[in-house]
Image 1 (spheres, helix red, strand yellow):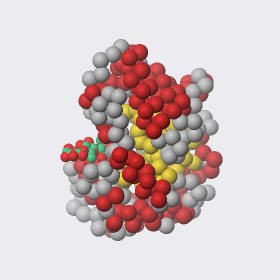
Image 2: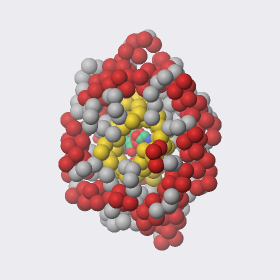
Image 3: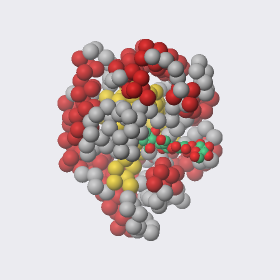
Length: 332
Ligand code: G3I
């Protein structure tokens, strides 16, 4: 009972909708989720691609079903995600408008989506992945990182407009900026904290920063504590929104050997300990693991490698990583 060990949300990202491995059709997954977690993120179905079939149209059926399941099981839900350059429906990518037209489209999207879920969500990822690893705004193609139409059409103010619209639509939900690699790129974290400070200076409501934490065996506890501290110093909440730990980055392992699983246990403990030791209780937005069981992980889908990034194996057995996470929660 992992979530019983914490007084903040312990979450998991789940497949839903018509996915083959949808939580709502899988008793094995439900058993794990109901035993260990008290918050859900939708891995995909609350993205624009899934909820916005056409301009002016909304499809909330799958999300409503997932939220009903969460409610029936005493879990809260973290909304993922309002504004992202990825998984935008084609009509949105093709939207024909100048900067003010795009702003209206963005505001309509947020009013419609966040408005629908008022009172049902603990928090939202309002804007996701607006920066590149070098700290510049995600714009045109750079390396293998994709471009952002939001930035191209509206400039950096799209972030401010998004947070204002989210607060207008939902007076109570915690509002996060969410990104990856904040745990190692000082430039990226600095760009994010500067942006957040500018929002605060402008009187725009931002509650916290989401550290996705898609990490590998190189993750370092001491460094992580410094990174969390930068956000704590702003008075903002820290939420680990998508943690998983890649163990087979160079595809050299044939199986999840015992030493590898013990290393992963230590790394999960380090991450959770860093969080407990650095983030004071009032600023703990929670910790969410990005998937239930190893074979469901996006990492396998994306990299094609075998990997074992999560807390449960592909037979739904708890891995040493689960105990590592629990051990980390004991730190103060
Ligand atoms: O549902 C379709 C299916 O009908 C089709 O046959 C199949 C073939 O391509 O694709 C399926 O959709 C895939 C979807 O996952 C569901 O499995 C998409 O192609 C695939 O792109 C999508 O990947 C998701 C990815 O975001 C998209 O960028 C991953 O599941 C999801 O875990 C991942 O999550 C992101 C967070 O939202 C933001 N942070 C990073 C994180 C990891 O990349």
